[in-house]
Length: 225
Ligand SMILES: Nc1nc2c(ncn2[C@@H]2O[C@H](COP(=O)(O)OP(=O)(O)OP(=O)(O)O)[C@@H](O)[C@H]2O)c(=O)[nH]1
Ligand SMILES: [Zn+2]
Image (cartoon, rainbow, N blue to C red; front, side, top):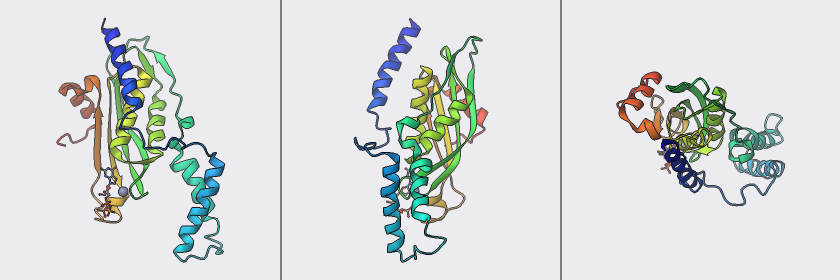
């Protein structure tokens, strides 16, 4: 009975996530061009920006920059836009019936702020309570990295990580906390080098105070937020 209820919740949740406001706003034709075609177009655009700034693109040091930046956008820092790069998360049966929460903490986050295209650098902490399925540890790091490799806002990235793990694990009992520095806040604008941003998403059992508390104790994060 309990299992049926959970499966129903997951099914509803799957639909909810499909059209979720946590999805990255992409056009329908986002992937109609190949990666090579995108690199070629972006290269021209970057060249135009640098040219407008008055830089000499014949200079040895600069002439490879448009191609370098275009490749970096498509293959590296924005590579997580393409669903073909979503990590395949191998799952296993929880044969040993481990019933406590599992926490994967201090996952390195390198993302890009979608407002300024400047780096977001920090840590993600992910936890789940198994509902019969366990996931390979490294897959949690890979899922974080996949969603980080997009133009992002931290709130959306945090939710996307939780939604993906809920789908992979077949349970709502997943949580994520991200603590990150935004270079658009630290290095320009207000230039506050000390501040960082904490976001969290608590699903299922993690909405309960004591479960949330246990997770936050493991990651030793100040919970006064
Ligand atoms: N909520 C949220 N805001 C973000 C994130 N990353 C950057 N921002 C903010 O996005 C806002 C964009 O505001 P604008 O006023 O349009 O940009 P701006 O004139 O460059 O603002 P300043 O950064 O204050 O100089 C800034 O306040 C950023 O700090 C994020 O992940 N989440
Ligand atoms: Zn920004």
